Amino acid sequence: MFDILVYLYETYYRPDACPDAEALAKKLSAVGFEEDEISEALDWLTVLADNTNGLAQKLPEAAPFSTGFRVYAQQEIAILGAPAMGFIQFLESAALLNPQQREIVIERALAINESPVPLDKIKVIVLMMLWSQGKEPDMLMFDELLLSDDESEPRLLH
Image 1 (cartoon, helix red, strand yellow):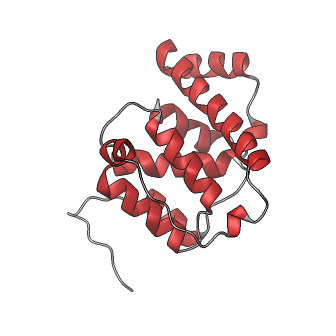
Image 2 (cartoon, rainbow, N blue to C red):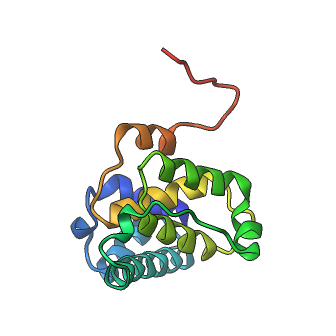
């Protein structure tokens, strides 16, 4: 499923540039993706869009600027794992995610049925959440989302 999400991000600049679900499924199938993966990815994206719209309507306008902090439930801690929670906290503390976006990322991460959620998948989830909102990550976030976590290639500080 994550290969499809990355493919969509790379192929379609904005979500409104994507064709409707049926045409998109045909295109993804023609590219070589499996039907099960296509269905799972399209369902995941549909719920992402629904959650984005639902949270925007439920939460007050001041919520994106909240200075509160997130307390994770035991189930969330078990599923997300420390690296994912730390990364989400880093993005929020750097003002790269607001609380609404954080909640969408957490919900979509819990929906993938993988425990703990690997950091590379959390990064794709964040990227797709921003993409679905028509927002581009700033350069700091873009570097964090797309740079390899491979320790054999250390990051240069200059």
